[in-house]
Every structure is written in structure tokens, then in C-alpha cells.
Image (cartoon, rainbow, N blue to C red):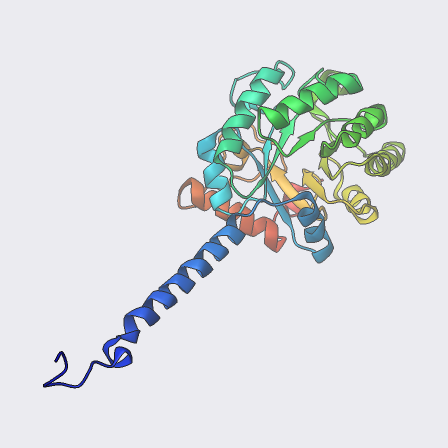
Length: 303
């Protein structure tokens, strides 16, 4: 007989539960790790940026033009990657942003979006690409479909309201831009602070409200007095992103090359974060920390 000289085996005694326990534990750990990783890399959305404003959390933004820098920026906590037409000046060497075309923007936007996993990617509509609502919709569609952008940015107030309304009606998120408008540089007569007079300030306040009513999700305020930016920020439900607009905006943006101190004759509102930092990643991390803590921009870098 099979069990003549020994007791039949106890299936429970024969089973080593420790490896099974370890296996279950390892499986749970892997699931938790994946969950945390997914949370860390989950794409920021427009409503989440609005929620950050409501919680008083500063939004960090930098320009990006290629995959390599996009990864570095995102890995060090940048919330919004702006594929700006500033590439015409800092990448292509032009004297202004005006020569930049749609093909340029789609190319650079696609490079950035392919590398991005978490940040919201915003792309500029370049000069003369949104003169009519139909033209704007067609070009914005290219930036979203071919470039992988999540939002488009355009410059101007009153004269852009109809275009903004049309884009939003098509389901395209829009970021507005008031103050210094680089695409109107010849009309403005140079890169000068805007909104210094009472009349100019009132117009910018009215335009900000109008753009919000027409449906923009973000608003960039460039080169305006800090007090004016604070007033506009307080009256809007949507987040404001400042560049040379003081510390009271809901977030900050700089041109990447300016932030790294690579631009000759940098504007007053810029700081070289690469100076004294441990490489480019360290400079980006320092910028993010300074914005989130409210230390940048200070009075020295404001108007």
C-alpha cells in the first residue's frame, strides 16, 4: 500500500505559505508602485490648473522647443510647457517672432509633446495665423492634431474675442495673452512695459474680463505693473501666468534660454537660475522651487 510505512501527507503541512505570501505582497507592491507612477505622470488638465489657483498653489511654466529639454523640464516639476513662437528668436536667430510660421510651430510642438507625459502643452498660434475665425480653427487643429498640443495661445484682447469664441465653440482650449504683445512689436514701437497709464490699465482690465467671458482657460500677462497684474488676477476665475508682471499672478513663465542665462541683455524680469546651480536640471528645479515658494519674481524682477 502507498502509505504502509508513513502517514499520508498533509496537503496543508506540505504547502509553504511564505513564498505565496511574498508573491502576494510583491504583487500588491507592484500595483501600488504603478498607481503612484500613474499619478505622478498623469496629464495635468485645464480644470486642475484652475483648482491650483483656488488652492493658492503657484503654476510653473517654461518655454520648450524640443524633446530633450521637455523631459528635463517635466522631470523637475514644470506644470506647463509653452511651445512659444519665441523660438524664432532664441532658436532660429531672428530679431523678432514675426518670421515664425505654422510649419515651425507644428514641428517643435510635436517634438515637445512626444517627450511629455505630465505637463500641459500649450502652443502659440504664430503671427497672421489667426486673422479670421476659420483660419484660426484650421491652424489650431493642426497644433492639436499634428503637434500634440493641449491648448493654443493667441495675442490680443477686443479684436480677438470673436476668434476666441469660435475656437472654444469648437472644443479647442485657448490661452489669452495681454500686455506686451511680441507679434505687435512694430505697432508698439519696441519691447516696453504696458498698462502704465490709467487709461491703458482700464483697457487691460476690461480686455481680461472679456477674454474670460469668451472662454479662455488661461491668461498670460506680459510686462505690466505688478499692481495691475494683481488686480486682474483677483477679478478672474481663470489662472493668470505672469512674465514681467510681478508676483501676484497665479503662475510664472520665462523663456527657457533666459532662465538659463543664455540670452544677451536679458530683460529686467529674468533671472539666471543656472548660475550657481548643479547643471540645467538643477537650474530648472531652482526655478520651480522659487516660483512655488513665492520668492520669484521679487521686486527686483518686477515693474
